[in-house]
Image (cartoon, rainbow, N blue to C red; front, side):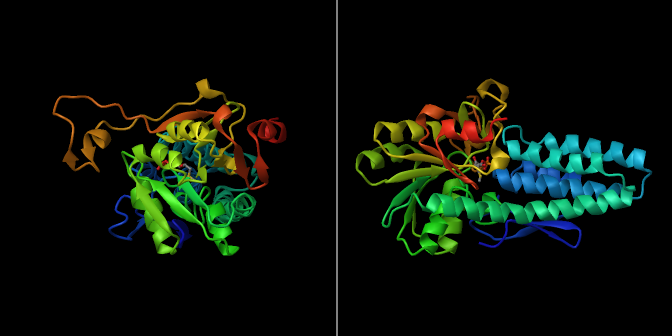
Length: 340
Ligand code: MRU
């Protein structure tokens, strides 16, 4: 897949993921406020991609205010950081990325213009780093995958959810590059259908065999022996659980019941190990995403309310292993390795 987001001529260029798979179109942003809206409405989505978009959004803010006195510059970029952080609450990458940029800004002794240059450079580095991290997740996770496996994934934790290559799809890409035969089953992932629209799109684009199932089918397919392994992405790993797209928890329960290994691909930018389950806000999105299919055809009687939690919580007990850019860890090993 081509990169989902790039920094081009002091602008952000990104794939508009709301219209895939029908059209591959690009959006351009030169105003951080528009960028923040695009994260909210999910033109770009997926935790690592949101993180890089947020860093680039900070670069847009720095460019806008670079001619101000330093004291005013600092105030304005702090305000921009708040607007960008206020877009989606669950993925830790968003906060991680904005804080990393704020750290550069606050530590710099340069002028507004010099800080701006540092911020733009850092945002570009973060985009590049994302690809390297994902390739390492790929290498580490590919070791687990045997020739001929069929892997179930939920939502889209692929190239589109990152700058490129993906997290949950990275081990699959890497195993295929090593010459293994691997195929994918993608949960459609109601209500935004990231599995049906995006995972199927990018795997098909790269000629990786993929079949889409309705979300309610995975338990049966596990029982029938048609799934060898589950690999999903994550928006945040706390000290006790994995937060990921709504429906992940049920997949993990079914995997446990069927003795199928359940792995989570997590760049270290998604680790929030000082948090516990209770510290995390689960995003609730608009009712219309559930009441209408893709915001168009209403399927729920008028006047009936819907609940639309975007993410759920999979406790560590259901997780076989977590694949990071540094290796594959059981949840306990993960805490030993990364918790300060
Ligand atoms: O609401 P989304 O599409 O941003 O949710 C995406 C997911 O839940 C992904 O699995 C997660 O962000 C990991 S992406 C590498």
